[in-house]
Image (cartoon, rainbow, N blue to C red; front, side, top):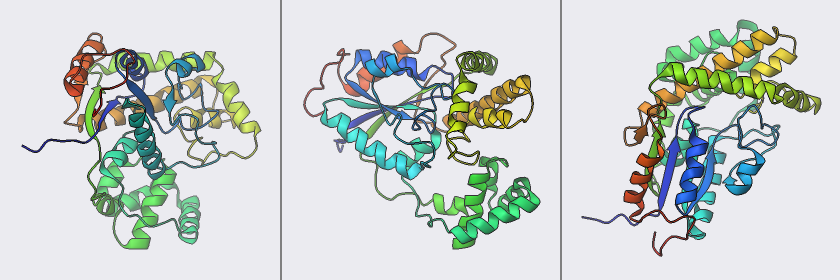
Length: 326
């Protein structure tokens, strides 16, 4: 049998409000691990309350790579993440630790492990024309048009996700092939890490929804709207930027634009977060090689502890350096 000499890494995945950060910090107390965030909102500076970003005390004790690395005016892509994550993983390894990648952005996990297909660069003229047409007929109609040719992408991309609908249509026009066809190509290079996947997968949606609502209320009480007001006051941000389209921020931005009242804002924010969790759970159920734990049926730490001891081939070693060769 051929031995796998690739360095080790751990993926800790789960839907929003499932307890990923708490578990990651507990594991970092037990094992020589370096934390790397896999979250499309946490990369942005100033998106703190509404993104449930770990607070300053937590980040001081448990530093996370790839947090606060971009200004919200700057888009951040899956390709950017893959490049940054691979570099961060290498830094963690050279420091004698195991990379622990924690988050809920499935697209980033997939891009990291499976690579990215060779998609064409954006064409401003095509993009502008698609945007102008959408302004006339609406993004729902544009989504229907895209889904007719690419039903897989149509099921995956929401009709209201203008950026991704536009990109799918742009790719089809530029290449004559669907986004799904191109993405299925992926990278031919093997992933240079051996990975243990741990997933927090709540079975009781009702309990998850209750946590989502409670956390959203805590965000509002903690000054979420004031945070969004500060972002708006900059003057260089707008509702179509990826940062502002993050769940919760988009609803807050629209509310401050005069759309609906405070109750409507809360309801829409909670609903959008629940829909995000639903998509994340659907993605996680496709990760058949992940070891899953239901956080509502007991503390997931003991099970994760056993899995890590087996994977690392060592007992837990509170913040110690790894033996040579790990």
